[in-house]
Image (cartoon, rainbow, N blue to C red; front, side, top):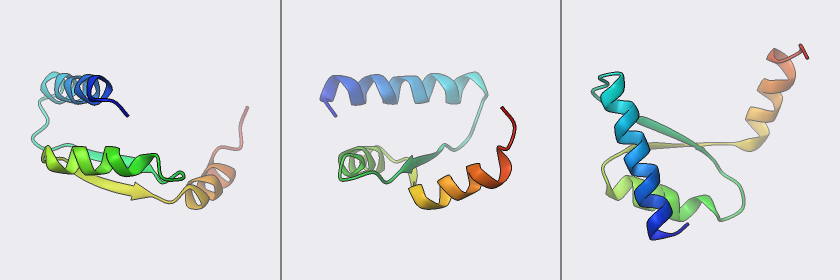
Length: 69
């Protein structure tokens, strides 16, 4: 997580928001170690709605619903 990287991420989010004319952006981030914490803090400070996703839950969802190759 760097200032340059976060600026680029926010720029890309805004480009996508404008492209699809979204009124609100919800950001989902998988909680892995402590790496996600700064991203959540920065995006929250920028006014985004950030939702933390449990990696164990997503793993189980993938196993149940992504059964094709």
